Image 1 (tube, protein in one colour):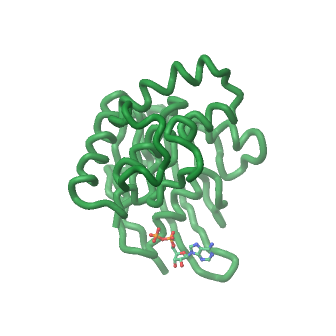
Image 2 (cartoon, helix red, strand yellow; image 1 turned 120 degrees about the vertical axis):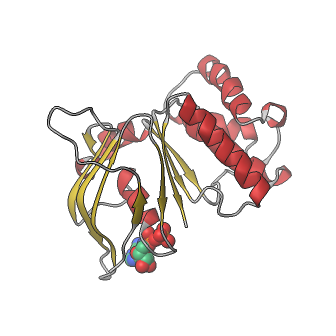
Length: 215
Ligand code: ADP
């Protein structure tokens, strides 16, 4: 059985307590091949928290994030994100919840034949935003990650750190209240890692709830 090391002052919500950004209660996840990735996980994250979920490779960190954005479902237990039961949502309702989340991956997941602007604007376009609004949002998002000068570059013209910054801009351009990042500095050297963590710190100071996995 795998155990996830969760470092926060996780406290079960009281009835009259504050609302939580994330509530994970008694969650188990066993994949169809019989591998148990998570066992009895409880986690309560308040709005504005900045949380690292740490554990060795294979301890269930990615699985935890996948449950939070609804790419996997728990075998049992309950997951509320922004007070919505993500483990029961499907289709449009799941898509709507995902707009409340910015998601960042270790391998950036950028579209290689699209420029920085297009990679960042694409999400908004898919959500039906008009050109004017996309233009209005692009500048501040790129500025937040220090990439104003790289708007017309393609991913292969950027360093790893810059590519990760594009993926952060893409995650925040829709102004989600919660950011989930799966080992975001896993492919980066210490300098770039520090820079990325500095950006997360700024975003958290701006009020975004942040959950980062790290080994
Ligand atoms: P981490 O992110 O901490 O490295 P993961 O959540 O990726 O851990 O994996 C936790 C465990 O679940 C591992 O034993 C892994 O092999 C297993 N696992 C992950 N995804 C699947 C899957 N789709 N099917 C079966 N087992 C999986």
